[in-house]
Structure formats: structure tokens, C-alpha cells
Length: 292
Ligand code: GLU
Image (cartoon, rainbow, N blue to C red; front, side, top):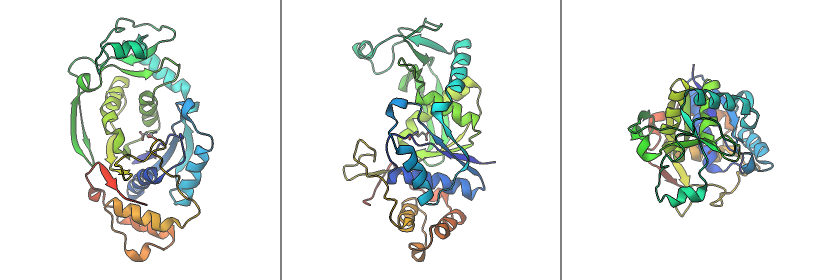
């Protein structure tokens, strides 16, 4: 059984780049008669923007991207993350790190130098880092970008899974949630491609099953920057006809909906998209320039 998901962070309203991700992941799940779950990634409560969750729901509804089951909120799953952290501590897979940002900067090294590696037991006001031993090679086959292979002790080093400010890091929350929700396929933006080997390593440490990954090209603005709140992406306009927008996005994804569907009912266009979905046609490039 295919189980996919869309996992936006409610740090601002959805923009056209997030809609592209949602659409591709939805089509891939529906084309395989799978489930498509919605998870609100509000683990970093300090970044949640008022009204963003509501805009996510209304946008998905406006564009006809229906989800299954109840929406999951990371902010309500702290206990699950705590259990995973405890398990890793028992396995001596983590250590407690009290290094401040400025101390880390002073080392002059891009990667963590291992200062606190000996601290295997909980210490207050510390971050928890996952140990990444020398020569930890992670390999996976991305469905868009092909074979990926890296020694994460050289590219990432010991990474934080619990923050000094008492919040769980995205890496831990996403891995725990994907496993507990039974996700089999992840389709998301290429900005997260370099997070994947870390997440696979964490899955291995927690004894979770492997997931199929696909990373999508990102829509960029005229400066070549990924659309985001920081780069001034505009919120999706929910007053206009959804079909022409979906039609253009399907085109960007290498699908070729007939022009007669551009102004048809969104459900008709989406039905076409599921029945004609050709994953292999998604362009294998990191950036998609398109002015909406
Ligand atoms: N919450 C992340 C974001 O909005 C996506 C995480 C994921 O798809 O794994 O960028």
C-alpha cells in the first residue's frame, strides 16, 4: 500500500512552490491508489505564523487536493519524539552538547568537532546530537535525481536532534512521524535533498523501515532564489479559478494536459492528471524558472 504525505511548515501562507510539491505528491499517491496524508510541521513553535494553518487547509481545498485521515500536528506529538530520543540515548547513539553557537564558530570548522562526545547522559540546557562515526556512508536512489551516495561524517557530522532551547529538531520529528504514519513514499522539494541521508541514518538508528524518496525541482523567482517567505513569495490567491494554475503546474512537472482542460472543472483536470501521471517526465533539474 502506497502512503504519501504533504508536510508543510506553517511559517507563512502557501505559495506556488509549495503547491507544486503538494500537487506532485498528491498525483503520485492517487495514481497508485494510495493514501495521501497531511501533517502540519509546527514542531518549531517559535516559527508558526498565525493564520498559516488555515491558509494551508483552504488552499488544498481550493485546488482540489483532498487528504485522507486526520491531520497530524507535530506540536502535539512531543511524547513520541521524547520516546525516540530516550531510545537513542539508551543505545548510546547520542550525546549531550553544551557548545554555544559562538563556541562552534570559534572552532573554524564547518562540521562539529566532537567536543562533547563523552557526555552520554542527560544534561540540562544541552542539545542532543546524534553520533556520526567516521566513514558512515549512506546511499539511496532518488526517483528524480538518481543514485545519491555520501559519507555523512564528512558532509554533515554529528547533528542536532534536540535543541538547546528544548524543542525537538525537524530531523527527528520528520523521521519519527514518517515512520509512525507508515509513510512509504516521500515526494518533496529538492531543497531537502541534502537532508535525506541524515534522515535515512536516523531511521537506521531507530530501526525504522526505508522510504522511497523523490525530490522535485524548485520553482525559483527571477533572481534564481527558491520561493519562500524570506524571498517575498506571494500567498496563493484563493479567489481565482484553480484550473489554469493547476494546468500550468502540471506542465512544469512535464505532464502535458490537453489545452481544452485549462479552463475545465478542477476535478476533471485532476482526474486527467492521475490517470495520465508519468513520474518519469518530471524534469531532472534543480530549478524551474517560471513567472506566475
Ligand atoms: N516541513 C518541511 C517544509 O515545509 C517539509 C518537510 C518534508 O517534506 O520532509 O519545508
